[in-house]
Length: 228
Image (tube, rainbow, N blue to C red; front, side, top):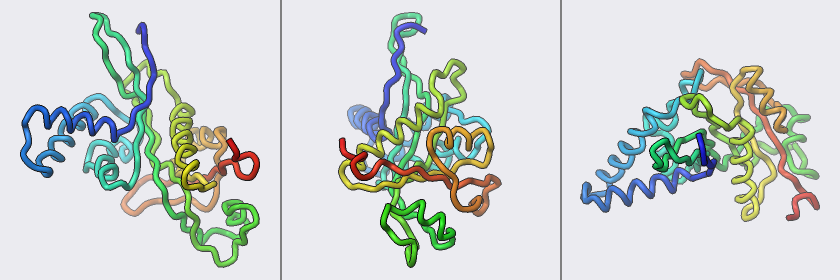
């Protein structure tokens, strides 16, 4: 595949482009109909062209139940894609979704976390006594498109995208803690530990889910190291 470029794009931008296209076509008359058309158009491509292997819950995030778009429109989270832009055999420009990450701000409940682990999670100088929650960034989703055989990205590229966006936000609001829930598979957890995340607390299994997750954290630079 010649003349290819990997770019990033937000779900927000994608949905805006779909909205403008629908409006310009004169297909809709109200916001409810517009939202339904946006979802239909987005799912029409994603449903056929994006697949997360061995993780049905993650695969369904942007497809079934409209969770990803719903979170986006409610301002609950933000999703970012890595995409491959290339010229096909007939000289036309094409785009492929290589993977995505979803990030949001959350309060981490540490009520049941052991005191020694609380100290690791808190900012330097903070006492773990009587602290029940910590504001932090959550990397909610990390997904690579298994439908693309020659997909050039790996988990590190997606984590770089997520942490890069978090650092941009951190310049404005400030928070030193990043967490994620790593699926309890040794190979997956090693990817996160190699990147710099550390395990804390016990495994979690959401109600109604067959999958267990390992809470993990990473500290952003603080003090003089945070100046840039």
